[in-house]
Image (cartoon, rainbow, N blue to C red; front, side, top):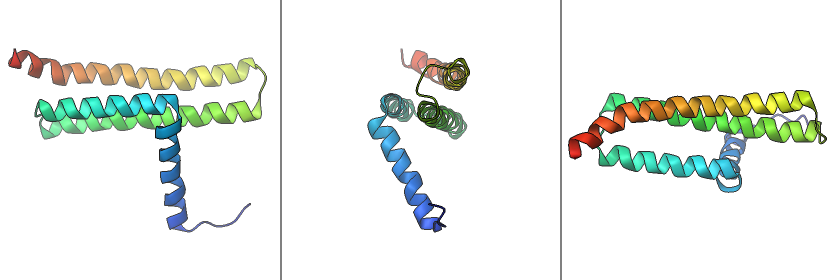
Length: 121
């Protein structure tokens, strides 16, 4: 199974991975819903270009980390089906990376959105 893939096949596999992540993975569905909600709110509040960059970077970081976390969890389950303290550590730390990025993203969202919401009131 060591065949060379074309560039097109590589992109196809990556898009298939995104499809599987967003349609089959529970956390993928949650992050997709959160992304849609934040995007709708950003359009509704008419955020500026700099704010869009911050929001998009946060979305990309959190979803990218969640994808890596999902891959690490699946790989860990294949490598070691039984409980193993080392695997638990790996899974916990990869999940913590997602949580950390999510917390920082919520703080950034509050900095961007709360003043705009207050102006509307």
